[in-house]
Length: 556
Image 1 (spheres, rainbow, N blue to C red):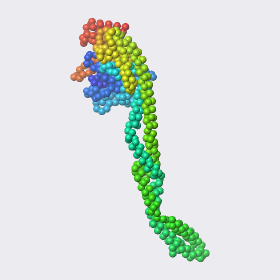
Image 2 (cartoon, rainbow, N blue to C red):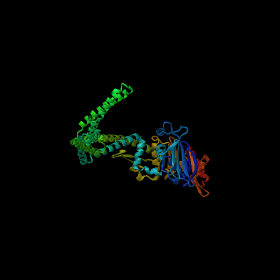
Image 3 (cartoon, rainbow, N blue to C red):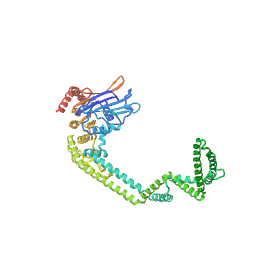
Image 4 (cartoon, helix red, strand yellow):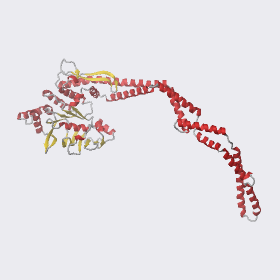
């Protein structure tokens, strides 16, 4: 439950700190005193949008803070743990904070760490339920009525499956439509793929082939130069007159008779002999190379043509020659898929059929649950309506068929028959404001045991009623507060008398500036406030006695 609320610099409030307990808390005050500020502040903690206009004049920021006590094992604790947030000890509670800056962006904190407004809406929103006169109008909205029935039936898992199944069916239908959209374009694409694949199959490119061919081309282009250089080399080193090998041989002959006279020449002679052998070997190799060089214009033209083809294919397919083989495989795979068009259509149609079967099954299960829950909800709300002064009041819930959608195949309508002998008609067409207030209270009570709400806030939902009906509403709020914490903003003394705690909102002008104060009332102060609500600003002794009697009767 909500245990503490602190508001500062917000709207007309400077600083307010309110402690809340279990049971029913009444919030009262003169019309225009600022009771709605309390609802607005709680709305911010639930993730409502905030603007700089909410910051009190003269303050740089507005701040709303609360401590919410979370039961052990609750869904809220699980949500916080899944987000990696600290839910706090059961005794300390969850700290929630919202700061609105006059300039710049605001801040939010959840469980001691930064959060977004969406985080607050997802975690705190389900814990604090605010029912206002605006929400009464939502009772007449078909989508809201459907959500109420699903909440009562605890259909969250079925709704999730329905939404997922419908999304899968929509996606499968879109894939089928896209696949079969343009048969002519598919045929044109097939022709182009066959042509491109034929080019690559005919060329049969090999990775690295272009490099090898370029080297051979360069050799053929320079054949004459290769022959001339190698031939001259053989001639100079060995075959020609006065060749290098002859001159080395002459030097060796001159040194041979001197070796016996100076052994030091032996090493030089040996090295020169080795050089002579090396020169002769190189000369023979140059000769063989020269005799192997041939000018081949036909082969050169063939290579040039092949390199041009490979270059053109590489440019056309956006890659290198080494990547053409991979491109050929990709083209073949795409052509195979297009070639199996009928198989593709059949496969996608099967996926559509399976998705539709799943969606139909999910919709049927959800519809069955709704129809079963509608009877139970109708009985529960009807019983509460009779307690609220509708002697023969009924709220039939019609579950009607509609086209399959993300929420199933049902349209829900809340009908209303407040008086005996009347045919039920749509709630929006016949219910007055006071009747809608009591219907809302009856619905909230029916939902109380199936939702995760810790705190119900009723903002003047008792508008338009009075007398005995108001007393019955007070009793129902008191009964609802046995299971949940309930905060009711009311103008009716008959309702406020049933509260376990009473908070008064007052507005005053101090030195030309408006101030709103919110303060808890003692037992004696409660009597005075109830008397004011009965008789006005200056209640008589009789009004005070009546107020005291109302409080005693409510306690009994």
